[in-house]
Amino acid sequence: MTLLDARDYYAKRSGRTALGERPATSFRPDLCCKVASSGRLGVAIDPAEVAPPQRRGPSSGGSEAAKPRALSKGRPLSMALRVPQLRRGLSPQQKAILEVLSGYPRQPEVDEEGCAFYGHLARTGDILDAFCDERTPSRYASISRALARLADRTYVTVYRSAGGNTRSGFRYALREVSSGGASPDELGRIKYKRSVSAVLQDARETASVEMRCRHHLQRHGVRLRHRNGVWHAVCPIEKKPVYQTRDLEILYAWALVCYS
Image (cartoon, rainbow, N blue to C red; front, side, top):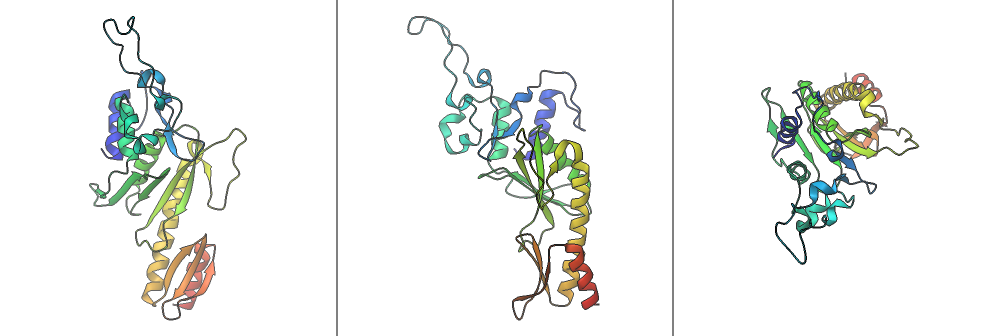
């Protein structure tokens, strides 16, 4: 099951519309994904959802419900990836989330606009890799709706893709919001529910600048590299940066002047 399939499953299950509105139904918000204190993505699981059905007939002196499994003690659902015994007794919602957490799809999805989309939650943490073509802004809306299913109180941090990756994209990481709040870091962490449109707009603009700058430098034999928050224009012959800055737009302006 892919991330988008899981989203559609939740929509049918809870009566949500395609745009994400949710009427008054029996949808359980406590089953939404939350970020555990350890930094891994997990689920706040209700013991009633994990407990198996009551046994019928006398059993060791009477009829009683079995005890909830160990996973119901607030442990993250990602533990079920490493302990197969914990997968038994999960609700359909939790099984769907578990399949998403397992790292599927490994192959990119291609939408109707021909854009390859990588959307999966990494097996080892709480990272959502979402690589999108800047020509398909509708895909960002799909990502935001998928993230909206995960938690109510989260911060979305926009990470640049790896320097050696030729795909233009972003990495969204979910972080738990403490009661005292979190100070914004250099990468622009903001409150998700309040300013997600601003994040996505900034992401589209940054992707466009990076793509134009990278193509302009490649025409002159210079490579663009991003490492530790710093952009480098690297000469492929000397293997050394000829210019570096933290502001991508400044580097692009420098490239236009030096390699006009």
